[in-house]
Image 1: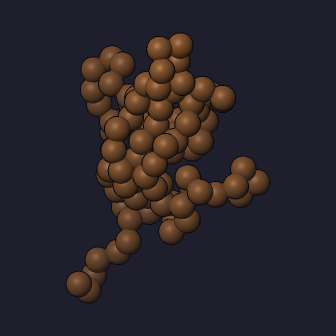
Image 2 (image 1 turned 135 degrees about the vertical axis):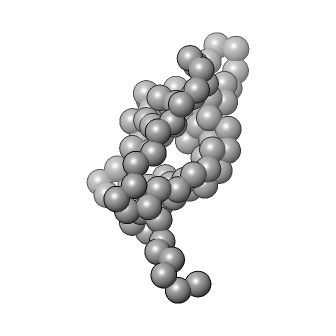
Length: 88
């Protein structure tokens, strides 16, 4: 369709987890959303529902080595940040 622009940020089926003594804890389970250029988004929810983990996953700041992104895509300006190297 004409007039539509690609989102600046696209999160598709993001899965983030933590390795615990009791096994793998899936903190974010297939979260998807997009944000257009010049737009603002808010993530709201109850305490412990994964808001901070979602945000930390987007910018690859999960505590290591326990925190991991298991799946999904985070596209920023067309580049998949999940698969980008640390140097990028």
